[in-house]
Amino acid sequence: MHQLPLPASASPPGLSGWSLDVLLDQPDKARGGSLPASSFLSGVIEGFYGRAWTHRQRIEMLDWIAQAGMNTFVYGPKDDIKIRARWRETYNAAEAAEIQELVDAARVRKLNFMVAIAPCLDVVYSDASDLEALKRRLDQLLELGVTHFALLFDDIPSTMMPADEKVFPSFAAAQCFFANAALDYLASKAPAVRMLFCPTEYCGAFTGRDVAGSAYLKTIGAELDPAIGVFWTGPDIVSSSIDADGLRELAQVIRRKPVIWENFYANDYDIRRVYAGPLGGRDTEILGLVDGFITNPNNEFEANFVPVRATGLFANGAQGEEAAFALALEAWQPRFKLAFIGETLSPKEVRLLAELFYQPFKCGPEVEDLLVTARWLLKQDRPNVRDPEWQAGHDALVEFRDRIRDLFHRMTELENRDLFYAFHPYLWEAREEVTHLVTYLDWLAGDPAPGAEFPHRDRIYNFYRQGFTVAVQELLPRDANGRYRHGR
Ligand code: GDL
Image (cartoon, rainbow, N blue to C red; front, side, top):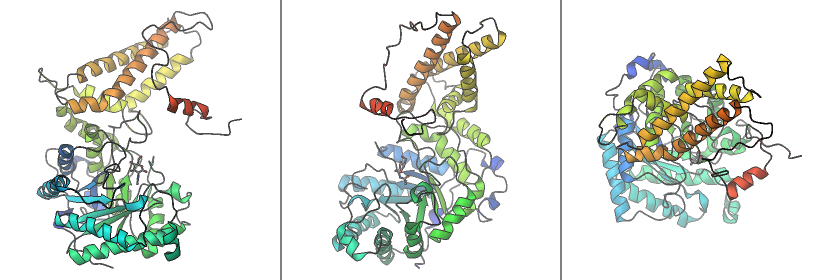
């Protein structure tokens, strides 16, 4: 095992300007009495598919991470060509200059700056020239001052190239050999380095829901250098909850505490989603069972303010989803300044936005209530418009529609255009759909003849979400929960 002294930068840089203390219930206990443990990594991984953030946004993300009391940024966008597809290529001068700036900016903020390399698509583990290519990449990054590295082997089939099959007993053994060689090399060159490894089986679902029985993870546990941290996303890629028992079981198999790669706020897998709500389904009890908690959030940079704050609060042991949400919203509001007018959106407006685009498994509480009302209203075959309950429900929906419409208008005038564009397509759809819903209810209230066609003129039928993808989705026998069953 390598004794790798860690850089002094690993502890949270302090939580200025907002009251973490109020939420921290016995913070020292949150991680088994050692908060902040100097080796505990907390922060953000730019680890999604699709358009990567800009250099300017990455620098700002470093501020957000520091202000949220976290200590790490992982640079690893999947579609940065030199991270994955062309991992053997070194950075050119302009790219290297940007990395250098990020290294410096992270150092000033006392953050760890970690760079990912994902050789998994086409590496031949037994080919010495591939190991040399990796070393060239590591050399360049070391020269730029990078001390934290991640090797990613996610989202690939668990099969080996024929050349590797002759040399390694298993796919996992091949990856361990490669990662251990990389760590040996780094340790021979630099006094203080840290390395994380993303396994191919990085969640319970990928082990066939049998973590303890996974031959792949057992090999990782036995053969991966104990100094290398292992990423884990929980029971699923996007886990509705991550519980302590599951983490204990995993730690036994991989023989170390995992580092959570948190996909709660990731939205690269569905173009209709964006998340700005609190973190849910995780109890601070799990912090003592992991070596880090790193969130891979929305592609839209500006949508990530609340996710980063909420993650920071959680990673520092703060209890209470709603309390963390309220704090994060308060800190977010100043970003909603209107151009020319100078005022900002009201706290109520900012909360409405975040409640509409809340969490992967539910909307915000007020929005969920409105959905219950809407379902009830739609269930009435022949609505009794004189019934006070019907009227109250209808009025609530009308008011809700108006608030969403007004929010949309006000957002068009935001000084921060990226913030507006981050939410624009989502808010547009929300406004269209809720407007349509109210118009439809009003039509029902007029007691149309059975079978009559809704004569709404403003909306073009099948206006959006058409084309190949929708056609394919419609072919599949999907139920209301999105599960598939035998078609017949
Ligand atoms: C994944 C990818 C990640 C992606 C996320 C959400 C991991 C380890 N890898 O499978 O890059 O953003 O799901 O789609 O999570």
